[in-house]
Image (cartoon, rainbow, N blue to C red; front, side):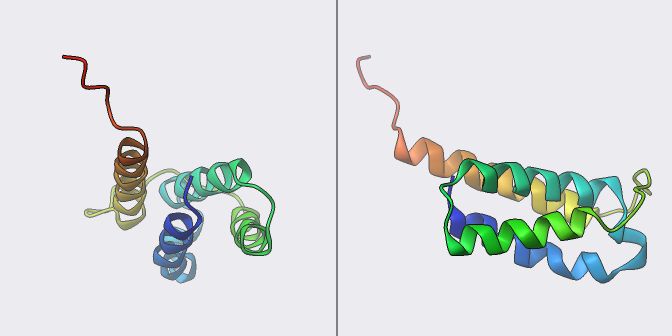
Length: 100
């Protein structure tokens, strides 16, 4: 996992923590859970701990509600981009064998 990717994704999600309709939405909370899990896979470090504290605090904000069906769902799109970038970085780090 890549700490800069997690940090960029966290920064992109932050504005939605200030939007009333998004704060407790399962879409945003799902993205935060994914970031938390990714952070927990990393070795402990100051930046990792700082981000983990922020994500965990955001997850404790209260009762969640179901997706409101917003189009577009920005937190959902941000999470999808996180997954795509994560997969691209993993593929680049471990190229497929060329035995043919």
